[in-house]
Length: 114
Length: 112
Image (cartoon, rainbow over all chains, first blue to last red; front, side):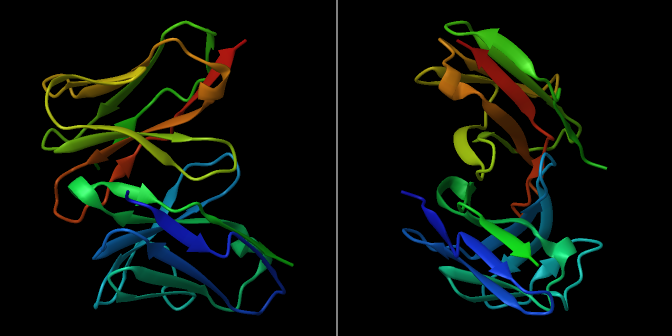
């Protein structure tokens, strides 16, 4: 149990385009999900907290207009990277609060912006 | 500022030995504690959670919590090369947001 999926697992896009990443809790409902970013050999960096039915809460320094988060249902949160640039290339990982109020991570999405 | 500290390593242990990973946290009011394993290029995977002082065992893994000293540790018995990964300590400060504070991780290398 407590499985979180992400789609796509890998995406390559041109600079200036937008990319949407989906995060789904497959066998539980999650009112709270989180979005992280991780650069090579660096620590997880929390970008935002996604709450079902309300606006996301962004961490300091994260541009909310660039990283649009929508948590429209209890099993789905989406992260849209708008007007992506090469510096947005990273490993994006979501997590969801599941059983026993524990964070369960998705497998991650590797974004490469050319 | 609430912090979670881990030695970055690498911690090298021979195959079959016990690996001991340690973590300290600053917020005395923290409620729950977690260990995640992250292989290179992959996302974190939950290994164990612990909520009360003492030891909690799950297979080859034992988590230890000492709230008075504000530390949590993870012991891996009979270490295998497949255990080589970065181990992340995470603390839920209990603010109601479920926003964990993660340590920077300890890189473990199990030598065959």
